[in-house]
Image (tube, rainbow, N blue to C red; front, side, top):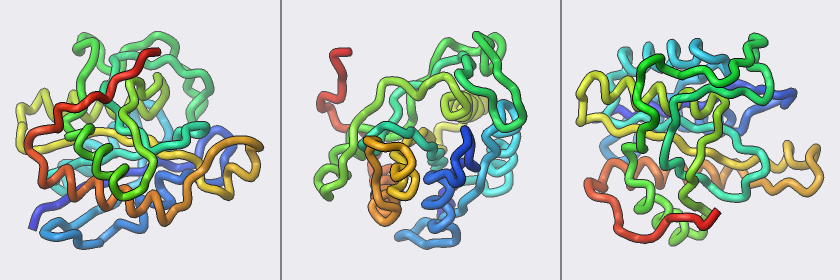
Amino acid sequence: MQTVLVTGFEPFGGERLNPSWEVVRRLHDMELGRAHIVARQLPCVFHHALEALHAAIEETQPRLVLAVGQAGGRAEISLERVAINVDDARIPDNQGQQPVDEPVVPGGPAAYFSLLPIKAIVTGLREAGIPAAVSQSAGTYVCNHVMYGLLHHLHSRGNSRIKGGFIHIPYLPEQAAHHPGAPSMAASTVLTALELTIAIALSTERDLLVSGGATH
């Protein structure tokens, strides 16, 4: 049986919960087809998040790593296409760090593309009635930091066997209640989306050649 590592974050930015961890923790120890899912929480702290992620990868030796984060204000499940080598924090992290224009990995490539079949996943989610889209930016906060660090870790070890990437999810309804006008998505819907994402990622070797671009 192959292992899937799924990560979520602790709350940040004054929120009492983080939807990524609230949903991801429900996947822990679940068996999905021939896959056993392991869930880990990451601190919303630059560098410490990557230390925890790398330790979890070494511990679990996964076939797939799916990192999940909160994107308050987005209305869809966002499959991130690219991570860039820059930390530029609009707000401090949970230890008060606020790097500006610093590299995630000094001397690393400018960017990495997701190793997930992002367009096949978006198509599968939409067919299941779940709003989803390819996102062209994971931001410059800890989510992008983790996505870039994950992909750098996989590429630098030359391990093409492991797939990896990042997904942003909307607020949960109980969060959106404190952000009037903000979109939300039920935890049960996000859970279904993550289960579908894992199944599609494990079974798809070549991504779909369909449009997932943006005009702005």
